Image (cartoon, rainbow, N blue to C red):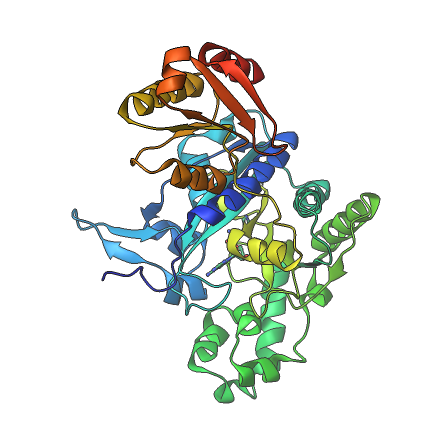
Length: 418
Ligand code: HAM
């Protein structure tokens, strides 16, 4: 038997409606905040992620699905949505339009990580990007969208962590301070950290190896190194969050796993789903568009992991909705009646009714069991008698009531309902 690749999931029939529900709620809220959907390719030239996500990140160094295509080009399955959106924004000159540009997406992403609960090699992100505003109110607006989305799903108890990791100028000073702090212990740290020390000291704070974590525990924090502009921006973000009454926690240790961030970074965390509790990550990235060859463009965005979001919804008992229910099941006895059922179902479906009949020659009893399985609200049985009189008994499965009506009336009743 051929099985699915490690770290992937089949989305089966009892679950897909839950995803549709979440996606629909996400589309609604994005639309209300003025976002339009953008869809970018599942794969891009590898170069985009090297430049966008960053050469020194774990994603680029260890996790990308990179291959050579038949034309000898290096191609990578998207490990996240932001870099592709930046490329599309530049390539399609969206910057020439009135700003800001507000884009949302729902996309699979691919990372070759060690699979565990909440961490997969293909997962889905609900993300958005807003280009063209450096105003701290924009960061707060994006955060409010995230929190309102979670609220709208009924989720309680999530923690919003924010931080500022400054601009390249304050980062340079901070990197010096980090190097000074780690200098004496770097030999005891993992080989990745020894490289990070030279190439990107900020990444030293993102290492998951216990000894590296321990050594980094008292490292200087970026907030003490912010330049005046970055400090003012961060104060601005906090004040706008306060205006909106959004609870937040400043966590100066958040650095995030992607290199493009500047100033604000955010994470939303749940304590109910185990080690992979971060259900949303994002922040501001004012340098990425320029880095990818476009004009200087401030930007802010985030992405939510759908699998983790679902785990939180399940943990809080918020996924009580059922699969959609059939409006009517038309059972039949014999070939002629089955043909008539086929015809009635076709007519009803044209009128937007979820109508079903028997496809596989089952007994009436078995057909009724199937009607029950698809939660059909109404049922009727067609036999020779019904074909002669064109009168059927329509049974309401919720109330148990039955009434006699003509077949022609049936299409009118249901058609009128929709
Ligand atoms: P990220 O933090 O790498 O950010 O991913 C965002 C979310 O995707 C995470 O918080 C998590 O819920 C989910 N996620 C990440 N990796 C996995 C995985 N292996 N399995 C399951 N879920 C996962 C980004 O991707 C940025 N592009 C977000 C962003 C948009 N920043 C600005 N704009």
